Image 1: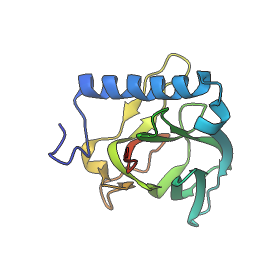
Image 2: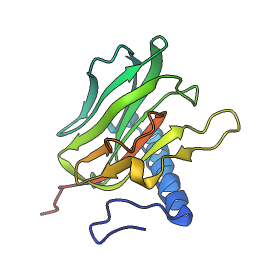
Image 3: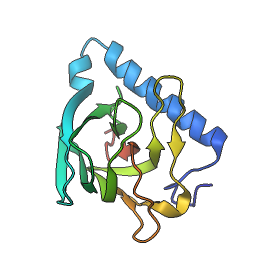
Length: 174
């Protein structure tokens, strides 16, 4: 369950509600007339070889970066989506393999947001595709902080297919 700081949530009803909130946030952003200003998705290659790589996207004053190292296989096509709620209070970042399951072995990963504080973050060994469900990593495999979701050295089992972050912006009404 969540700590007082609200960093990590693992109870399935809460996870379901937050996943629905993320979907609604992205759908609302896509249906708005200024959808290109509220959400964007880009493809990128996740490259094996044990070398640290990074991919990032920015939306206004907020950004999300995904840094990783992986082994085995060949390049995989992944996607990163960032979105901003209509009231500018929530920034979301999702990184995933559209085919659902990665066959690479990740030696490390970190997703980081700037300009916002993480309210919810989660990592998955399998993304929901083709009738399969999201399979969340075990709690001991990763850590959710104020601005990062990262692997836990010695506990992470090298499987990663999706990361999701919902962060509260520092946007204040005057």
